[in-house]
Length: 215
Image 1 (cartoon, rainbow, N blue to C red):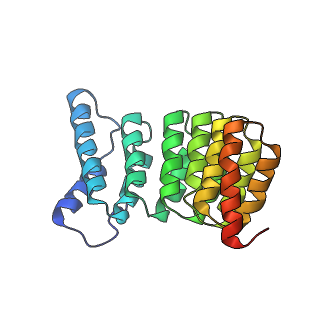
Image 2: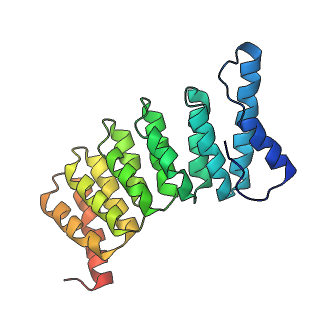
């Protein structure tokens, strides 16, 4: 497993070596010690806030994918570090995980990459059976200022039956702040039945129309 991507301190190099040790075959106290060691390293990497460390954490999640107690903090840490699009393929493989909490953390981490490459996975998550996952996927798309992300949010805005999820889509279009969001917001205002969502969408639509000179 090639985790080392740039020159780093000997201490970080040692920690990367510890992450390479798989949990498969460990049991009892040895397994508990291995968990604790990896949790400590994950926490240290998050505090370092260096985007290149997201890659090793993605590889850790893939390596120990049968251990939910490692997968969850690893993916959460990737989201907290952010800014590394190289992790998108690995995160995409976890986007169909059986546990909703993993899928929602994947959505958040994908959003933190700020990369258009993440849009495909996030768009699929906007159709997830769990409404909280849909909410986080739509919110994550709002962090990606690209026309494909705007289109994905627009589709989710019209497709979702839960008004809280639709409000998340309206806020995502506001966060993206791009002119191609205006037609989607117009449709939302025309067809929205939830008063709170409508009250949220109307001023955002008017603001974007003024900003981009659209009548």
